[in-house]
Image 1 (cartoon, rainbow, N blue to C red):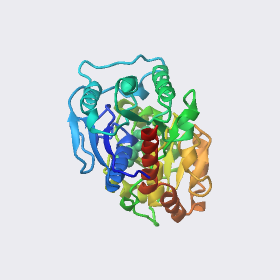
Image 2 (image 1 turned 90 degrees about the vertical axis):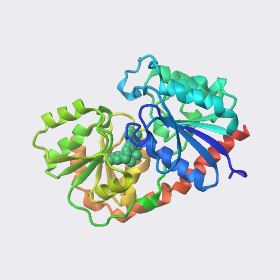
Image 3 (image 1 turned 30 degrees about the vertical axis):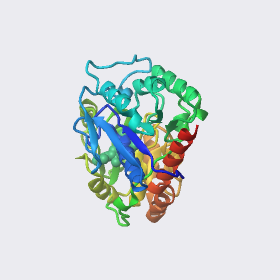
Image 4 (image 1 turned 180 degrees about the vertical axis):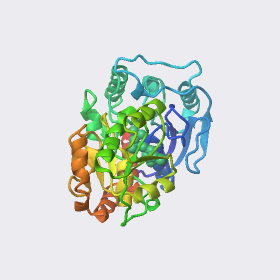
Length: 357
Ligand code: UDP
């Protein structure tokens, strides 16, 4: 591992303040990476939009207008910058202080940080948190990955494969502070669905499965798209579902642990799915469409079931077989593969490789 402590500058997503849930899984990934690096003796600062909170880690808060989320734009959408862009302001700050750091870590899925990379003196490690969504973004990501080999990381191989040259991305996975997730051997009868309430997450299929099976579905997560949620309620007025809200990790794992299984219904290539490993950590098996990150995490038939994408009938059939899965095996998989130590090892090794080149 690294022989001396590093000084790191971590730049957050600019689609929302940390703690709001608008950034999705990268908020938890950033927290986990930061905490583990601090525990290992590195020093770091986090730069994020004003109002951000990330555990008890101090944050350099930057004012300005938020970026629009990439997944709500089309493939041919141009790059758009608001008048007083928080993203621009964050990177302006980074440019001014870069000499104080060994390495800059970028977790924003945005064009600007990639474009700025050759203009910086310090190396930038880019963590790409979603699959390919637009040609403009693909182009700049590929360009920087080619120009600065080894500096662009992703969560999973299936995510990397959505970009034109998958082999140039470093696979970093994810990890959790497992001590925050309690193993729960005796669930209620309910199923869980966890995520941002947004079309790319395919919530309506989980609601349809709840309606067919009559098994209650507990929905947990950030209400990102109100109109989308209202439409689901209108289409399935009598489905046994409950939107419980957006919770802190400690409350989330309590709710989640009390469920028989987690349903994952992504319409897009889910880059990873932090909620999958959070469920496993609680001993909750995961039934997911066989698409994206969950296919690399779930052990089909052991810690969950992978079903044909977009098939509600497939979900229903798998729900009928939940009892074949052992909850303790789920927890064991999380411990063996998704600890914070394992994530910290991969991140440290990545940073060391970048700095040695
Ligand atoms: N989450 C949360 N509270 C909730 C529901 C979800 O903090 O009530 C978090 C969860 O811990 C996870 C994130 O929301 O980190 C969802 O991330 P995921 O990687 O599953 O999907 P993304 O939103 O990045 O597409």
